[in-house]
Amino acid sequence: MSIEKGRRILVVEQDKDMVQQLTESLSKEGHNVTHADDADTTLHRVQAWKPHLILLNTKTPGLTNYDLIPKLRRTTQDDYVSVILLSEEVPFEEVLKGFEAGADDHLLKPIKTQELLSKVRIMLKMKELQDSLRRANHRIEELSTISEVTGLLNMKALYRKGEEEIVRCRRFKKPISALLVNLDKFSVVNESNDFIFGSRVLREVGARIKQCVRNIDMVGHVGADEFLILLLETDLAGAEFVAERIRDSIQSSEFRVEKHFAKITSCIGVAGLSRDRSDGKMADLLRNAGEALRSAKAAGTNRIEIYSFAS
Image (tube, rainbow, N blue to C red; front, top):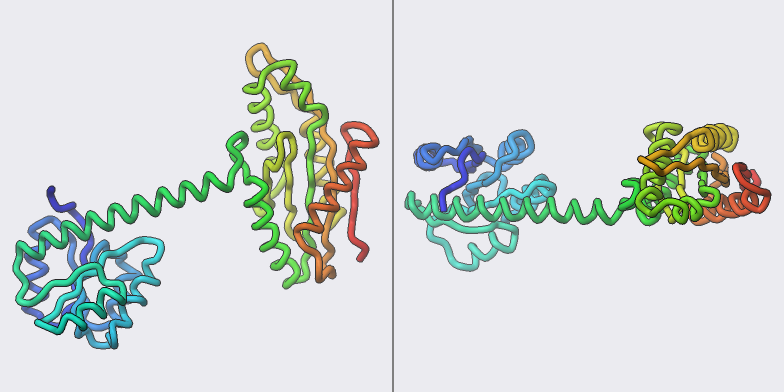
């Protein structure tokens, strides 16, 4: 297995001859090498240069009881960097401290070139695997927060984000509003066509809703035929205006895919937390938007109803 080429390697070492030896050996393998000689410079290099691997002298100035390694880990928590310790012959307990602090491997001086290159190859491969795992976990997390049908946020993700935004709006005394949109008689669309067409209609409705709101607002697909919109720093008057725009965009659209066709309307429940409301929560906002939606549907189709907390 050949060593990955072109990786960035940071050598943290005070011995200039050692720095030269390591730099020459690693550069011949196609890697980019730079060095630092104290803890502060090391942290700066890591933040600015983002190395893939660090060769770290255990006697680096500013390094007390291996406290530099946890700092490196915190600095690179979103992008794993491997750490190989460099030291003279020391008791095993000292080496163990380095591993407990977060180091990945250890090299004894004087350093043998083949041993160095072998460990570098292994550590770079480990970084590659760590990065792949991080990307996979990120993708899993992403998939767990979006609707497979529309690509919008699902209820779990929107609820969590809504809780955070309510806290922020409360802190800065800003209003926040919610729109709960339900498509009228959408089951008929599925029964008259097919579920593939129905899914396309849902995606198109989601896209039209997003066109009616700002980038800072949040849109979620939270039920079979329901959408939830959080309008940040928006009072009820503003929310009613947006709701009307969404209602009109949906009812004035024709949804066509090949031989399938549908005209759709919607009912929308509107609720809000005023800027003076200090104890409102996401559950309250959803409950009241839901009550407003039920009132709208009880009165017919293609309607908007508003519910608000008493100010």
